[in-house]
Amino acid sequence: MLSERVRTILLVLPMLVLALLLPACGGGGGSPGTPGPSPTPPGATTGNLAVTTSGLPAGANASVRVTGPNNYQQDLTGTQTLSNLAIGSYSVAAAPVTVGGTTYTPSPATQSAVVSAGGTATAAITYGGTAVNITLSEVVSNLDNPTWLTAPAGDTRLFVLERPGRVRIVENGSLLPIPFLDISARVFTGGEGGLLSMAFDPQFAGNRYFYLYYTDPQQNIVIERFTAGSNPNLADATSGLVILRVAHPNFTNHFGGQVAFGPDGYLYLGTGDGGGAGDPTGNGQNLNALLGKLLRVDVRNAAAGQPYTIPAGNPYANQPGRRAEIWAAGLRNPWRFSFDGSQLYLSDVGQDRREEVNIVAADAAGLNYGWNTMEGTLCYNAATCDRSGLTLPAFEYDHGTNDANGCSITGGFVYRGSAIPGLAGRYFYSDYCRGFLKSFLASGGSITEQREWNIAAIGNVVSFGQDGQGELYLLSSRGAVHKIVRAAQ
Image (tube, rainbow, N blue to C red; front, side):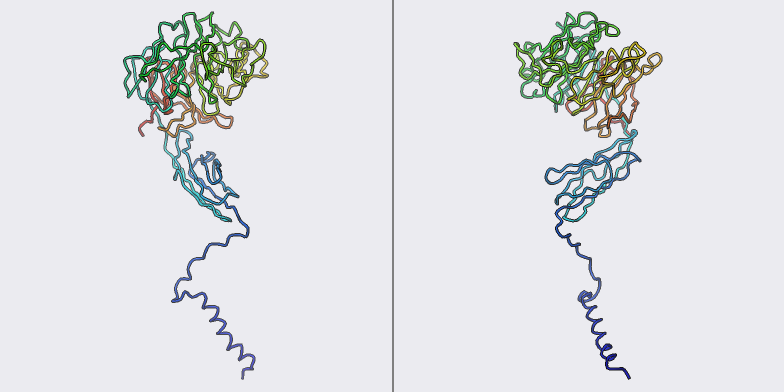
């Protein structure tokens, strides 16, 4: 017979089991449902965002930007968890990445993620690759020695310079019969002279100013400002204001040729060393001479009585025996240079062995690029030389036997157009003697992704050009302008 104690336990136990089972039943039975959100940790006011990337080759960096509350911005190069973020909605935007001639496109390109207090939001990006191939499309031909192509930002016209002294306009694919401006009567075209480049004022939409770089009958280098007329396709030929005239008396080569506005709004121009072989007059290292230099002047309030002023920060301002206009020294013949955001890409034509591209911060003042102590990274005409205080090129190439690799670099631009995203950030250049089209990526102090593009032979490449949308062009010695476009896959 059961004891009274055991009997009591047996009576109570079923009731306890029933009490435990009842809360788990969903009324009429079935699924118990899904768990609710985890409780927010006590006192949590921030959260996390885990971004994952996949699909890129080993060692390749993604290009992801995360933006969010309180002007938050963070760039990522791969999978990463961002911690201690303010709660709210974040945008995750990924850009295409080009590696070894293949462009990897992100999916999705943009997405949003909501960060909650104490939680971890996620965003996944998958890259898929397609090969990037380009070709050249002829835009216009039968020009008279084209030297330069440019346009105001956003303008669909192309302004093409002809060496004898004319600025032509290409509109809707057609060359207009009447030049925008013709100053051929005052342009010297002997040797390497002529009308060499053009820059639109950063405020062109309001002031209508543009600047020309040319050589006059006395072989001087001249920078002159003109004004566009009431007819947008015709300049006012009587509006000329000479900004600067640099004497270049001895030789008919090494006139330099580039004029451009920097990101600081000042006007830059690159002058050659005066010509001859080996800089016989020593202009490159002479800080009391304007030849062989990169000059910087302020033309915002240019007038006949004072065509320019010296910007604050010019390294040799108010120094006896040194020209205040000088921004950098030690150049041989900087035929072409260009700005890319806060970076300056300055190519300098070599003497017998090396062609070079200098890549520096645009605000780096007082640099000495070495000529004629050095030619690229080689001591010039000497077994040894003093390199102290000199800025060596970020990129160079040797001419090779019988100039197999080239003999005169034609510097170009970093691609920032929208038509071929896979080219973004690549610097394009050519060589007058070889007519190739090459590019590289400069990042983190190193040169990567060097590539020669398979293009048709177009003759000697005189110059690159950039239109109002950031697309790039090549100007050939055969009188044609070619646009870099995407090739059919």
